[in-house]
Image (tube, rainbow, N blue to C red):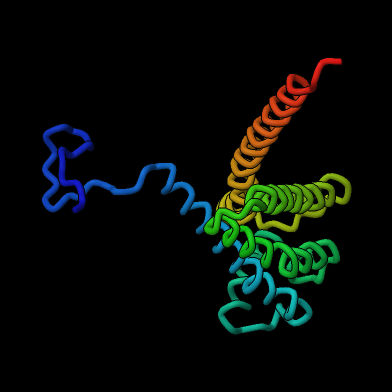
Length: 208
């Protein structure tokens, strides 16, 4: 039965009728949140960005839901409507590679597959690198050519352009640190085990 003990929220005397204490630890909640992240990014890359790759040449005239969503986002980056070679290339790679890899990473985490941190590291680094190139190419156009692809309004600059893309650097950054830490711990444990085995082997050799 679920724990109906004291309410942990403040103020201490708060009245929460029907409150039931969580039965999952924070660590388990975070693992499930990471799985959800990779499933959502897999869907985004495969479906939404896949739509762009399929319809990039005619996107300016598309009137279905996906087309209008892309044209709304393009207010923050008009390169999506001009068949920009960099944008088309990075979105194609994202849809074809990162989409399936995101789903594979989610499955590996759920099944505790030994490859889970390797996949998480690969996908997360790819997200960070792709976003870095995305920002860099637009910045170079602005600095060297004086061309801005973004409307100047706050919502398009800070929410659409920076906000929506920064998520794909911040969350993957945390996941990179986690995977590196787990990998270091695994190799440290393996090295320690190997050292003990070698030491035991040396001790068991007969004296001549």
